[in-house]
Length: 119
Image (cartoon, rainbow, N blue to C red; front, side, top):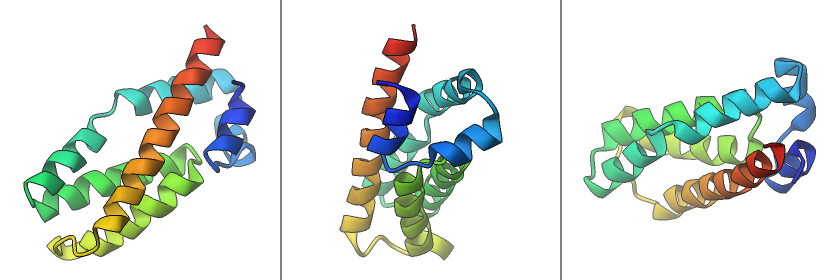
């Protein structure tokens, strides 16, 4: 899968990210950082433990990374979750969290396919 195909598949903005990073090697380097980041695991743990402040921080970090990488769909879902949890509010709508999980897993699984073809 090419990087352009990846961005199309995950509803990202290739034009935006290529403008920001200037070349695909740089995009892939930051994509590797995204794949190694532990905030999604921290989000899952915080939700499980009902630690809403920790969940907010993890979601907020994922939101920023998604925005930086132009992962539009993931940015939008994490933005919704972040606003839902703002101020330590309890997760009252689990569908918001499940959408983040779905969008995150779609980015990761497809990004791994791009990395394999880039080797």
